[in-house]
Image (cartoon, rainbow, N blue to C red):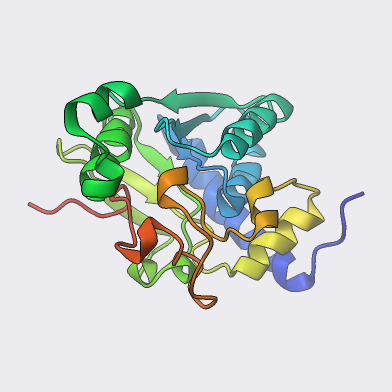
Length: 229
């Protein structure tokens, strides 16, 4: 049975819903991206209450943990998601044959080929983009706003919505527990931020949940970095 939300989380939930509903209902072509980490599943739960068939974009890089793919498929089936697996132009085998093991030699280029480029091409079809980003996740997200304009390299501009911008990790987990939302099993193994398997390890800094990403060599894959001219 779902547990009762605390008054603080109830208020955060109310604010998030009041923020999302009018923006999603007036959007012509909304979408949501999901890595199926905790905050992404929580915001997806909220969005589905407004637009049950919203396109859910998942970056299928070819390097994910088996647990991530299994959990994605489970949630897609249980929630009847309109799941869109966004694919790179080259398979893993093709990329490694042509360029070598980029996640070792040039992780930025690997992210560009397998995440940034494919997502930006997909986002060209939409006018509103919902994310599960939070300020607390990383110092690179400290100035995150709940609503921002995001310009793709083509010049196409989307409204980017991050309704959990002010939420803490505790808020996310309390919401998931209160709504009986199962979470990605990798959390039970100690992972705190989960991406592609070769570039994700257990966090080495207990105060930085993203310290296990890219062996600390960078903080972002690039999809949430605004393009500049």
